[in-house]
Image (cartoon, rainbow, N blue to C red; front, side, top):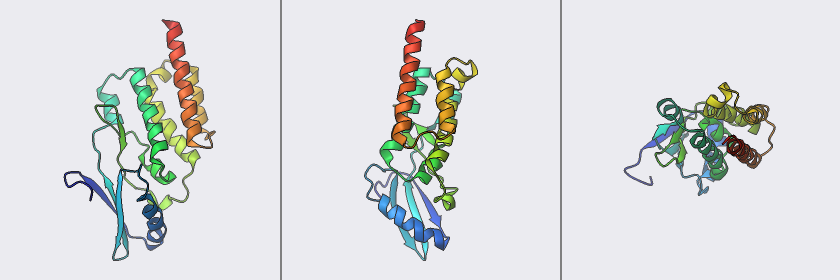
Length: 193
């Protein structure tokens, strides 16, 4: 383990067919220097063990329920979530796993990290970028729920619809579209002032 004071989540995979396939994927991820959430994988008695750093701060859900976050702050959180997806460079099934408002963690410095649950790891071969876009749209919908409820910006609704329909072929396209959305929101806010 990397740090004796850190907390870790250890997942045990017993199903042999999964172990054979996942051990290759996670062994490869051990050399992914950007994926600092993942510590190691090993097998024992035919089972696969996956070790992740447990970075518990405040969940996105808790933050939104307890704090009156400005649109700018919520926009920044959305941006950082998408940036993390790009920077971590992890398999799609792990991205799908973390895109949940309970698992997205927000530090006091507004850094974004994730908690892993691996509840549906047996579906790892069926996850697509389109499914991930649908889950991301739900997270962003939560972030922009105030603006959506007041129908403040058609741009938000259009972007979320495009995400739900899986219109982007790559994560970088999602990020670029999100940045364009934020720019349009800023411009509209400036015009109103």
